[in-house]
Image (cartoon, rainbow, N blue to C red; front, side, top):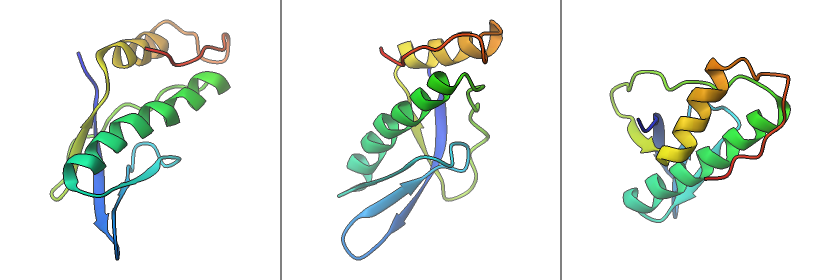
Length: 99
């Protein structure tokens, strides 16, 4: 299973800014929709690594809303997040998010 997070693409003067309501610490940008979604996947994985480092529960993706796109995480990262939330490791172990 690969986690997919809804992201919001907001055009500015030169780029598409990317944010996620599920992971408020995340923000990125891209030159095109394709680039922005790739950057979103990479950036979300990086942002989630801080949850691991702090021993916090990983926020699960919420349903997609109208106007949102989906950023897909790598399978290895998705599996680690799901295991992290279900094995009770929160606050007990520090881990680096590597896939």
